[in-house]
Image (tube, rainbow, N blue to C red):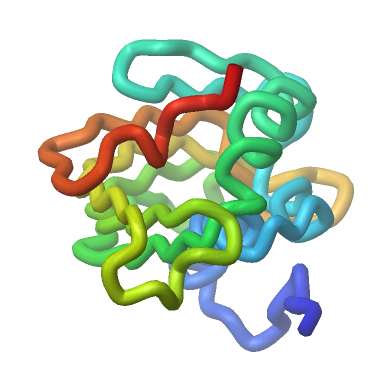
Length: 156
């Protein structure tokens, strides 16, 4: 099932939040196209627990190529948007619960799972070419985790 990249009925605040939702859908469904639509491009920066990842190519190879094939779900809540009417920049904060399972093993009741709670700090820009809000900087801070941490270890 494919996901629409642009939803036409959103308010400005909803459109800002939708950039985060598009990124999460991209990671959870391993959908490169919707993931790409969520980010400002090669100038995007993600800081994951203090470790920087710069550029959309690096986001795809270091994050999507690893997490995308997994059985994952990210639940987002407590979203707060800071935005002035007419501005082309915005910021938001949110909390997330992310469940990770090895590919194809999510339905195993006793299979390995890793759950992490995080806080997100995101800066966004409104793309001048298409009018869509996109993530420019995303800092993620893990607050707590539980489960089988080996799920998150890269092979090799």
